[in-house]
Image (tube, rainbow, N blue to C red):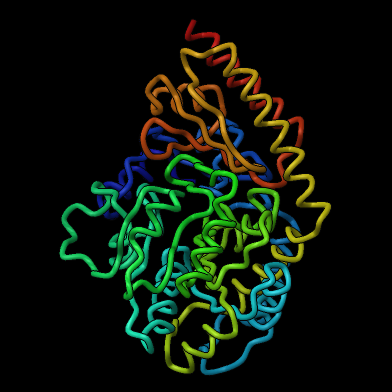
Length: 397
């Protein structure tokens, strides 16, 4: 068995170093909400691979699907039909209320397709401009970084794709002021993940619906991070009465496997048409078989209700801790098991201290952290995590 030193040597010599990996942990295996490093140390994984491992590590139901499909048909070109592709599209359409699904491989690809679909729809009326939010994140393709204002992500990649107007998040007046005769859509994360788990204010969705009706715009929702049960609804917009025109989805959809999906209305789908977009790997039988199973499990009302219950327990527990440690916590916020916090201390210092106590969480923009346990996390594991956070906070006193 390879040791940690060999792994680090291979990373340093042979990989493009895009990631800081500040914790220095080399993971070896996982099960449920727990992972183990190469030294055999156990951690509670409240990152879920940034919301990807939605049903926990090595979920037995998902493993069964992987083994069965891998022994049947792993890949076929989109020149042909395959059965899991159709089944996954049907289940996703039923769970979301959207009409059509385009499968790809990642959240960035799903967002990229959403941008292309909107531009194709707007091309008949010479509209291409898309309004996006400051502090938002839609991926790292050239188009998706053109849509955001994160200079760290954008540095060195100019010139950027034209056609995006960035406004303060969730400000209806700013959105309306930015609308021109060339505006085709408003694109945003209904819960801003990388921005620190920022939720929309009350009445925002009703306001954006009024703007859609008034100006004939499309609503594009990036639910890559907050979708597939993370907030207690299959998609966050299902907390509202507003149905989007296009939705980008990924992360938790594959239960750990790489898959993305762009959901849209019949009208948008017809506009895109045959040859309007494509992918080699997207919609392959292996990943769509898993996505179909994940969608089946997560879309059950009992499952989603449990996400809300467990999320409430975790958020309330964190707020209790924060009330006793105002020197550490500025704010706790969240929905379901998508939880963020603003800190009054250095976030990396806090993340490292928790990791030393066997609890893994992730950072966000600014001095924010994200807490994303698997949707299958147990109440006992939540209590364990809260206990570890309390211990770290006490030791700072």
